[in-house]
Structures are given as C-alpha cells and as structure tokens.
Image (tube, rainbow, N blue to C red):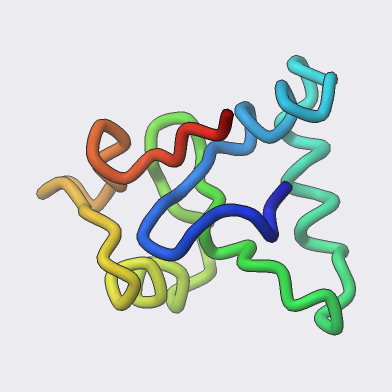
Length: 88
C-alpha cells in the first residue's frame, strides 16, 4: 500500500492501518515502516500522523515532501485537506 502513495500526497498511519484491516493499530504501521528493509525502497516519507505531523527526529522528511509538492500549513503540519491521498 505504501508503494502506491503517489508523489505529492501523504497518507496517515491510521489510514494505512484501516486499509490493512487493523484500524486500531496505527502504531504498528509506524513500527513496520521503521523496520522495513531499505531494499524495498518504500516511500515511507509520505506517511504522517493524523494531525499531519511528520516523524520527530527525521529532519529530511518535510524536505522530501516539500520537494514533491506536498502543501504545509504555517504550523509545520501537512495540509491534509490539500495533500491527503484518497485511495480507492
């Protein structure tokens, strides 16, 4: 599912958990992404929390998202109304 998130869009951990059939396990999604082998080349930077905040301690994530055209609000969160990916 993560591999299908297009550039310029983001998805929340909770949305990925819901799509996987585990709606109460957003943190598990975060853990799985953190432990995913780099060889998979997953666009993990396109996953944010429900408020649109990027991962703490990952300074490159907002830079990568901005380079793809993701829109941020003045408070530093992704503008989910503009940049959220709505999978079918």
